[in-house]
Image (cartoon, rainbow, N blue to C red; front, side):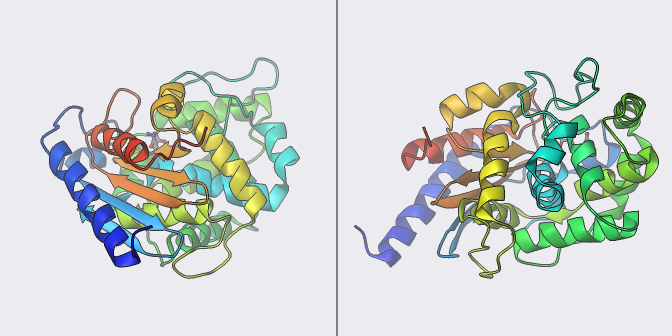
Amino acid sequence: MAAPEKLSGIVTSFLDVVHDRLITDTRGAVADYIPQLAEADPNLFGIALCGLNGHVYESGDTDVDFTVQSASKPFVYSLALDDRGLDAVHARVGAEPSGEAFNSVKLEAGTGRPPNPMVNAGAIVTTSLVRGESSEERFARILARLSAFAGRDLSVDEAVFDSERESGDRNRALAYLMHSAGSLAAPVTETLDTYFRQCSVLVTARDLAVMGATLSNGGVNPVTNERVTSAETCQHVMTIMATCGMYDYAGEWLLRAGLPAKSGVAGGLVASSPGEFGLGLFSPRLDASGASVRGVVAAQRLATRFGLHVL
Ligand code: DON
């Protein structure tokens, strides 16, 4: 086995190679259905990998802020699980891949349950299940959980929050449908504001790597050494990420990268290699499933190079 410094050099230079090769890949388009996201610089590209010893290897734009968007969903799901337990959460949201887009209106006939906690409908339900006396307290607990996973105090991009709230009719329609069916048992407007706010939390690729590594490490943040959640919760979260985290690309993703992962429409991607490390990627141009084009390719190359496929 190589000495730690040597290993560190090998990992960093491999990240640089992947970064330099993919920087010329300009496929995809920046999300514009939330107007504020269209302002992003499409050329940004960062790759970060956090080992379970807390060391973070980085290449490119790993300290540039962007909104976490759907990459928040696994971490808020962890909080709902800790607050309510697996059975109570899944009485209201399924655990099956939908095979459909992130904003799909597919709900279970009869119950109105959304397919899983990674699509928008399911995430709106898991957000509503986080405990709190008020929506302020509920969001404060969500922000604290995301911050604990990242190992630093995170904050909200208010301009993205406003933009998302103004353009959020599809999520509003989903929430009303679920409310009328009884699967969303909380006030629609308040729940959506909390969900939009959670999506508007600012992170970096480095943060996502640390967040992914915390899941890989059984719930202990490897940088701060703080226990954020239980190993059991991490197992549940990574299972749902593996089966549903990449939406209608989840099957092919697992085939090629073999890692639990979650994408976000601002171009973030978080992946966890259980017992090994966390990966954080950021590049704003997206593919048809709403995942970062460069992020997906970079993660697949890293998984192949380091033999990370979990199966
Ligand atoms: O609710 C939305 O549409 C966004 N706030 C999040 C969607 C998202 O990130 C989809 N993932 N790739």
